[in-house]
Image (cartoon, rainbow, N blue to C red):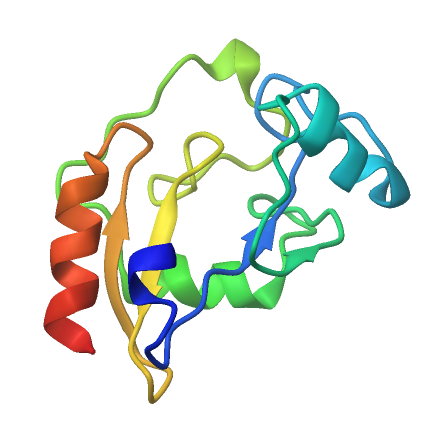
Length: 130
């Protein structure tokens, strides 16, 4: 993100506890968890981190419904259902924490990135948009 700091670009972070119940903290604890636990080491995000949301299931935030409908998976694979904590499970659901969506400056969903997508691919796509 720092490499794009001078441009009209920002990262938005949303916490969610629907993946392996890995984020059980309440909203006011989130920044301390990031700083001291995960990732820890004094990490302080340089971008807005919003309160906890649901990104899948009956109570998912409309923003994520829109993003998933706009950018469906090309080759959808459902992972380990035992670690999913929502219902109903749909083929285009977000599969794990740190999945990313790139949105253009005019608000159009541009590309969706899975958890293990190399950051260089995301950076190249961002550079191509700005």
